[in-house]
Length: 118
Length: 281
Image 1 (cartoon, chains in turn purple, cyan):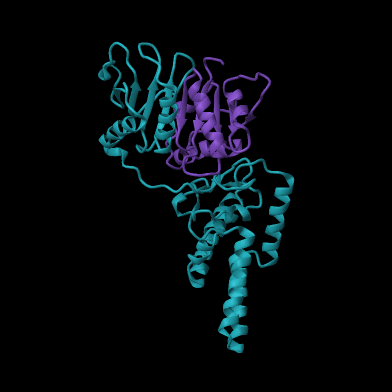
Image 2 (tube, rainbow over the protein chains, first blue to last red):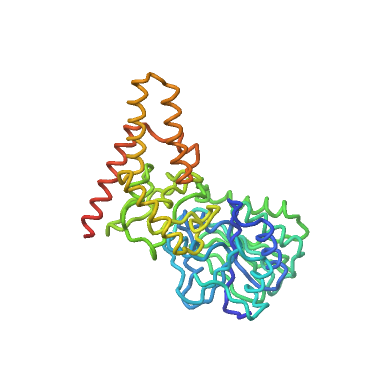
């Protein structure tokens, strides 16, 4: 994967809407890989508390987010006064996609895979 | 940025450290996240976010020499290095919690994982949500733009405002179904929402007003018949219908204020909405 691409994983810790097996498997595979990544307990909480670090969305730095629906993630960041850049952000939906697909996209294991743009 | 939850745990597996046991790494990451901490894993590959304020607890198996925290701390970021050695996940987590406890500002206020988020790509600033919500969740900013102002007032599991939004512009990310959960909005979704609004208009433009009227009529009818049981049944029927149409949890219905209070709140919200709409026109 590109050295400049950052990975952010959301645990969705306060809800059961993200299938537990998917979020656990994504974390397991990220943890077993050799890449650096950031993980947060719950993006909704960070949005509610308005404490999403600005560093997370530095313009021009590609970012891949494993969380939920791209539309929800986009407006959660916006609500925290920390809008996502329009380009180079890929949101992968752990509510609908398999762990294998998500990890493949996060780590560019399958180069043909494309995630939804926020 | 708020000062809350600014403790970040960093698993360091870069230069001058030994890789952690894979099982410990995974178990600890999951446990730290479930406790509400942000966590970062750093290897020699890839990039992570910098930190501009808060407490950073760097955990690692520092092979030769543990780095000096003061070399990395500054006015806004306090860094602690902690050698995990042969410790278990529970022991490491306990150590981290001690650092969390050291932070005065770390006392975490409770929050509810249930609040609306506005999709401003879809919102037309019609103020329907402001008029509808009885719990003062919505307000307008200085530019008279609708916004979520009192998240914590929102009633858990109640998505009713998003159900009355004609543009499907209100999300509840933790809702079970789409498009309220943020799923893509289809033309069918918009049509259904518009249909609801039309029905609402037919009922008199205000669901609460319709509910009030219906309840009042039932009260009048049943007062003549002197049947409290039937009156109660009719009211329950109204509430069940409203509850089903808008997916309002029974406990929210049960917590609604009195009819007089509803009327006063609805009128105040409507006045606020009208004022915003007037100034926007």
